[in-house]
Length: 128
Length: 65
Image 1 (cartoon, rainbow over the protein chains, first blue to last red):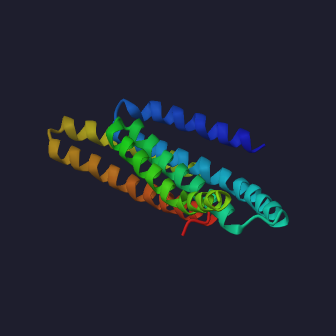
Image 2: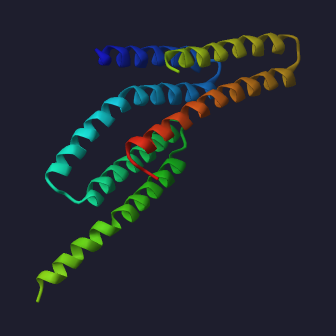
């Protein structure tokens, strides 16, 4: 019952944040970062299990290794960018959050470039 | 690494709040601000280690290199 642990951790963090917020608003952001990171580390082990199953399936289906690793990289980049942007938005810095999101989008496009090029090349090959 | 860190940060917050009000009563405003700064720095050290851990784990799981 991992979900009980995670919900309990989230509730405790929320209560502590409310307690600390009145006196020390500068520590609240660090509390929320810590809670978020701990929850994600708890769930990351499960995610890696799921990914190993997906990898095994794609190996059996004979899919090119490039495509799967690109998708994984894009998911990782998007998650980290979203994490940082949400923390900045929590701290009231939505301008910085918007910049982080922009950077994450550009990095995702760069990661997706090889696949886009491969797609375009196969389309060009189809057109006589 | 775990829930203890959340409790630690909340404890540091409460302790610095108490110290801040005590030092303010004594009229040592600058010392009060320094304690606040020290609390933030200590918490930041712990949080940054945790963040580095997270990024390393994400890098291994999502194969980002």
